[in-house]
Length: 282
Ligand SMILES: [Fe+2]
Ligand SMILES: [Fe+2]
Image (cartoon, rainbow, N blue to C red; front, side, top):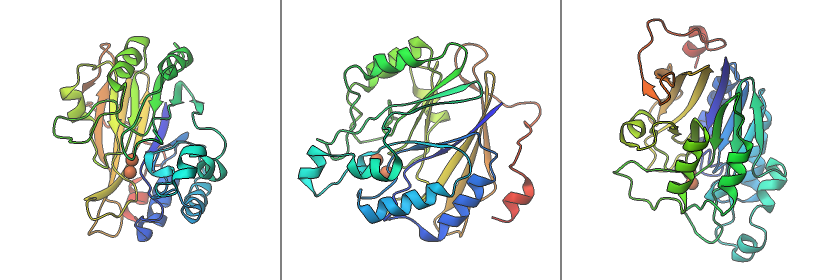
C-alpha cells in the first residue's frame, strides 16, 4: 500500500496565509510515502514567492517531487521568460523539471507542460510522450504528474493543452494508470471518468491547495491510497469562509477490470496516519 499526497496550485504570493500551517499539519499527518506538487507553486514566479514556497515545502516530512506550472515562469519580465524561464524555479525547487520517483509499487513520472510562449495554455513537447512511455514500469502502478490537464470537462472554457489528446491516448495504451494535474483550480475525478473516452487512465484534477483569488471557491488537496488495483482518495476541503480543513471526504475507485470504475467498498480501508483525532484538531 502506498500513500501519496497530491498538492497543486499553492500560488505563494497570492495564497491564503492563515491556512498554510493547517495545510502543513494535515500533510504531515497523512502518513504519506511521497508528496507530489503539480505546479503553480508561486503566483508570479518572483524570488520572494519562491522563497516562501521553498520554506513551506522544506517543512514537509515526506519526500517531495514537483513540476512547474504556468505561474512559475515570470509573466512580466519577457527577457527572462524566454531566455531562462525556469531559473527561479530551479533555484528554489532544485534542478529537476521532470523527476521520476518510486514509492513502493507506485512510480510517479513528471511531465513539464509549461509553454513559456503562452500565458496559460500548456503544451506537451514532441518527444516527451515517448520519454514517458519508455519510463513506465510494468510492475508498478504508473502515475504521470503534470500541471495542465490532458482532458477537460465539457463545461471548461479554457484551451486544452496542445498535443494532450495524443498524450492521453498513448499513455493509456502504454499502461499509465493515473494522471495527476491541477491548473483549473476545480476538482474533477469521478466526473472526468464519466465523460472520458480513456477509462484506462484515472485523471485526478486537483483544486488549489492555497490560492486565495476571488474566483477560488475553496482550497483543497487529496491523499491517494493505492493498494494493488484499488484506489482510495481522501479529499481535504477548506471552504473560504471556514478557518481550516474539514474532515476528509472519500472516493473509491478500482482498476480490477482493466478500466477504472467508481465503487463503494464493503468496509472502509484502514487509513494509517489519518486519525479522527488528527482531523478533529484541524
Ligand atoms: Fe493555478
Ligand atoms: Fe496554472
